[in-house]
Length: 75
Image (cartoon, rainbow, N blue to C red; front, side):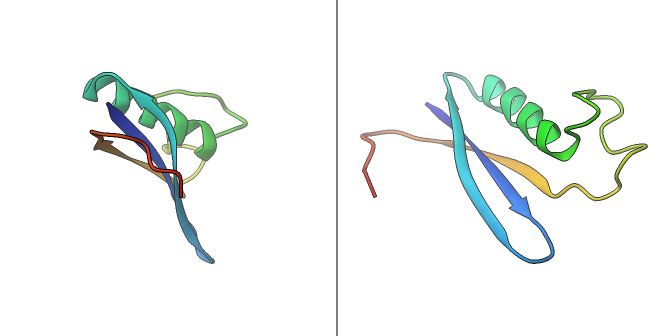
């Protein structure tokens, strides 16, 4: 299982949260790009080719993909 982690790197704080899980690494990267772009550009929708070009030169939201094996542990 591949986990997609949304990461916020702003001026005042930084955090990360797992937002979804995927069956393949390719699907996880696709989901990560979409969710990061959704939060970086909420008013303009998702446009892979133009993301960050005209509206905002600083992206605060990023993503990471990690492979997970085993059982979930409640923390």
